[in-house]
Image (cartoon, rainbow, N blue to C red; front, side, top):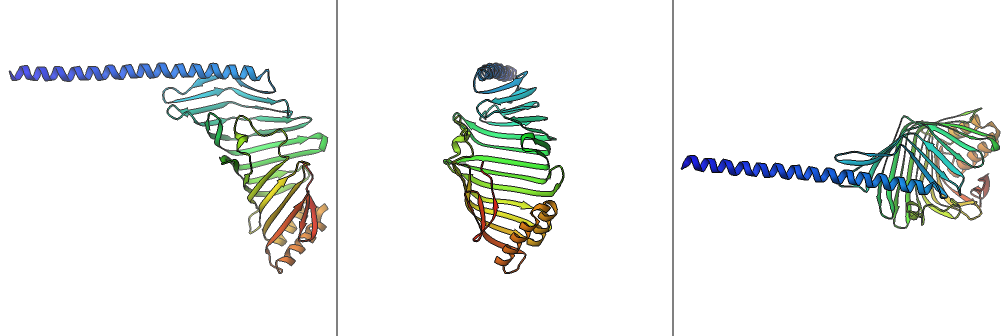
Length: 336
């Protein structure tokens, strides 16, 4: 009897193990079939959308498109990426794109994009760029992006615009940009570490630059509607901070409301905080000797407002492109 009981128990355990194994095999088979079905659907849908875009005003291309990531991720891969926006005259090409999203969280994706890249804007603006590493993340729902971030290391690029006799080289060790919807507004934050600018006949000293602002009524820019073709005309923003830091106690920060009118002119009322007034004056005069007299005049005015100190907090007014320090105009911002 005891032997029969043990045999029955062993047989029951064996049946349970067999049933469990069968359930696991069935689940894996169903999951695998579902993954590859979803991958095939995504690939077909992406190819149809890309083919349709090629016949429209806003086109995109993905070289050798594939969907990978089995078993726990799913993402689109391209050997090269290209976009062409006919209304704005903008086109761009990039290197390989790799993307991935967790199967259980398809609305949150991460990306890696390879260089080199070239951005062209009619009639003759060309920006060539490359980088060591660029990665991004995005959270999206059916109505568009909720938020997105991009970070890159070892950025280097060259901006050329022959019609304006413009040739500009840039490099940065690290950079980031973050955007997110905030009600009807759009929050934007960006930074560049050790940014250097080569103007051809002169090179600006390396600096750290950061900006943090909220753009009114711009959340829809992240939806399928996209930004308006007249951007930045008619745009208003709250600039929480725009900081340029040269190191060595030489730092400049602007904050306050600013707007671009329908005529392209800039207006705003900003708080300017500047450390190292004399050092800034000397830096600007050394790099741009043609504005040395203006730099000295502005520095003297700021020092006067600060009681002769090297640190000042003053009001800067911008009225239709004319920059005022107190009652005196000190600079002009050309319209967009």
